[in-house]
Length: 112
Image (cartoon, rainbow, N blue to C red; front, side, top):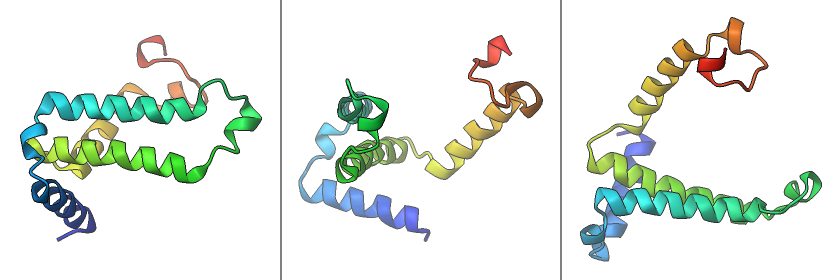
């Protein structure tokens, strides 16, 4: 069993011990991801480039962890392997953003 599988098992155990599975439908997990991402964005809101570098790293870690927790639970709910789906998307992005066209560019794939 991989470390990621062990971690997801820990998340599920934590959730189940609190009887929270009833609240973890796909819609609410997706909303949770969005809300936690907004909380991460809030840390950076209205900050200058210099101020961004001094944001409390613990707060960033906490918000990232919340996002990842919901992502892992949503993936598990649909029997998706997080590693597999990230690799699949990476391969799609390799096709959309070939190095010779995308290197150093922030353009979207349909603008390359």
